[in-house]
Amino acid sequence: MFKTLKEDIRVIFERDPAAKSVLEVILCYPGLHAIILHRIAHYLYKKGLILLPRLISQFNRFITGIEIHPGAKIGKGFFIDHGMGVVIGETTEIGDNVTIYQGVTLGGTGKEKGKRHPTIKDNVVIGSGAKVLGPIVVGENSKIGAGAVVLKDVPPGSTVVGVPGRCVKRNNVRIASPYTVDLEHGKLPDPIEEELEKLRKRIERLEQIISEKEEEKDEAV
Image (cartoon, rainbow, N blue to C red):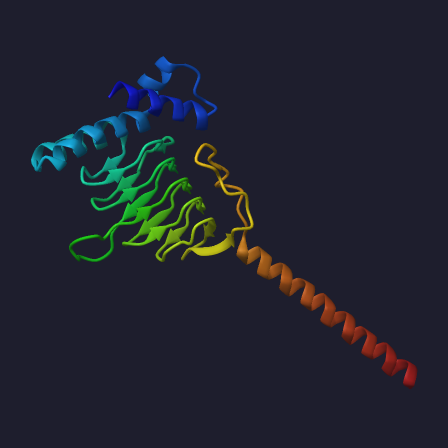
């Protein structure tokens, strides 16, 4: 238990430049409190208990603003930055070295039983306010942009932005190693801006062609 707690604290220092001391992290980081309480609730949940783990989950939500169902499976090196409004559903599976920011939802769709929440693979970063919905898989080393709504599987090494989420980069960006997590979830491509830029260049080219045609016509006259 203490070894796991030590690892959780190390991860916070690694990924949050605002962390100044171990005491500050232990007392003031709701993401740390949430994952500790979740581990207790998840242990009891696996033992077949239902009500007590749910009560711990509700207490966790009350004091941290983070709601994690006790059935969710979470790997090592998990970091929730700030965390207010984070929701993680019952059948969610989260790999190692995953980072999520405030307002993220890992939720289900519909009323189906069984696996209905996302699977998040290793080294994934999910930006503020992003929604990942349904029994989809987000591949290793991927990045979900702030505010994105992801409804389909995400290939490994991808960058996803927009509503609905669109994969705008894959395998042409640096892929984080298990010990290096890319936290730049705010510096992402804007596919709409890129398309508008293409249209602008095309219009300029068409205007140039029209201008050349008119000059040729004037010379002929």
